[in-house]
Length: 127
Picture 1: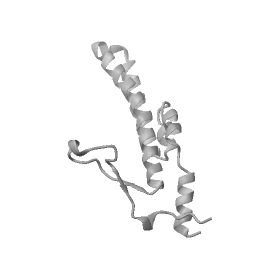
Picture 2: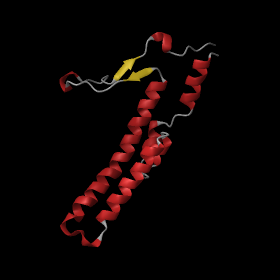
Picture 3: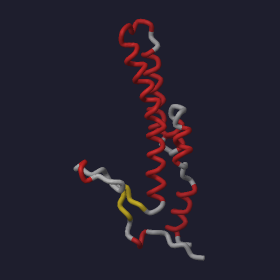
Picture 4: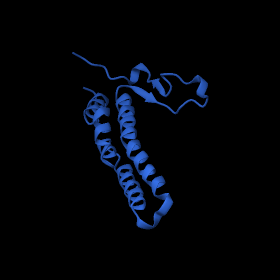
């Protein structure tokens, strides 16, 4: 096997499946850890902890519901972000190049954000 084929095979074996990333994303920071994003995991834990501590502080008064809703929204954001990151990495390992979103929302469709790599970049399987 060529070195590039071995790297592609190794990278695809080390990927976290999107479903697993989503499930682990319910625990603050663990979904990002599953995807190998250690700094993002740390930031997620810090933001979630800060929101929880602010929401539970006694002198917050009428702002308590707002910070509680922010903490709940962030708790739902983390697994979704982990899922999409894992899916993007999986697609990249399968030969797709993920590009930025189209600037015109009317032109977006199911395939927006995906661009196939040229065939000479695809790993060939030899039997």
